[in-house]
Length: 466
Image (tube, rainbow, N blue to C red):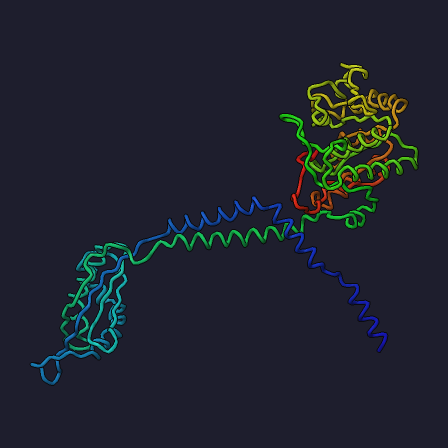
């Protein structure tokens, strides 16, 4: 018995556990990510259903007349009387008479029409009042058919209920307004609801297929690398028109502990690089807009503030951006040096008389992998090793660009930037594999743009995601 209980417990424990809270969080993140698409889908569905309702709308007009019915007494032909049961009988037998084809055929022949509009008859309770109604899309046709039925119906009904006389009480005349409304409001609401349901389905599918990393534990389980730091999402100071709003550690405003986070990252990176006496660090990300340039710039600045001689090189020659952060746009850079157009002295820039020197990317080039494969690139790194304590290479996303592999051969180790809830897990794995293929050890990863805590002043963000 105990063995059976143990087996049952073990079998139950082997079942995958579903984290409902995490599923809801994933759905909420998907809804935020696809909010604009959701708005467009709801509006489009509402407009489409409303348009379809408008196009398919056909106005229906009703012409009606009320009568009293007088029937001849079969025993006393000279006497006539009102008989409510006869009126009710006529209403009951009317569908049979109409569908028999006799009445419809005579009306169509009399009016010269090819189809018969909808005709109905009813008796008002136990009275002898009889109401005839004709419904058609043409108001004049409805009225003409009504008059024709009034004229022909007694002769047709005589074979069923005997001779009758119909005394007109009232009639509607030619109807002016349709009896059915277009119903646009209801259609728009239904379309919006349908669009919302469809959007929620898309969000649920997106949440199930687009699995991202949201904390250190998930990142560690995915790639088995140490998380050397977490940088919160803060707003950087915009440095001019067209320049990036990248947060810098030496700025006075330290929201959400950004400066302290960078310093802690610096300490851990130094410790990891010291294990193998590494000097050249490659900083990259899996895909674009994860903040790898932000990490490169702030890590280089933090090392320089500690008194280390640091050289930061913008190796993203397709989309160089470090120059914009330091207000040096339009200056010569690495591309010019590798082409042989500028000397090393011409492209190295010292930042604010500090220990930080930067080689900007220069003008964007379309074939950076050929430039980076030149012997000149290796000579540059070799020369820099003798003059600097640390060399940080800001590189393109490793999972997207072929030139990232060429840069990898120049570095001693790599640091992977992972933006919280951004890249898919498969993309992160692909990026790690790409770095491993270059034979350069990954000292760890840094989680960037983590959600800050809420304070009285609210959230703060930075808009530079390179």
